[in-house]
Amino acid sequence: MLNLNTNTNTNTNNKNDLTKSIFFYSLFSIILIIIFMITPLNNVFLLSPIMKIVIIIILGYTFYLNITQIGILRNKQQNQNYNGDNAEFIGQLNTNIFTGYIFCVFITLLIIFVTRELILKSLSF
Image (cartoon, rainbow, N blue to C red; front, side, top):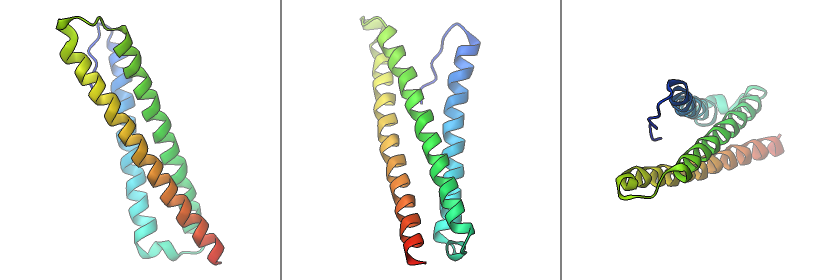
């Protein structure tokens, strides 16, 4: 997401930390999806459903963090003056808000996919 430069370092650090958290939780959930849904560990009786639930929780938390980031960007966008000097900055904010929504859609698709796999595996036993 966009690095929002403000005068307060703590405010900028919080926004950067949120972006880093979104990245690391997304990366961790993708690694878990690869390990526990594509590899033969998918067939382990108790481990697979537990890890799928963990994946769903991590993806849900990533979704929450991303929505929080979008809210921060929307607030920043509303606080900007709409003059010619800020047109480029507002364009960047709009782009980042839009890509944040697209990322939310992909996270939702992953949650649906993992939930579907969890339900199908539990019905087959």
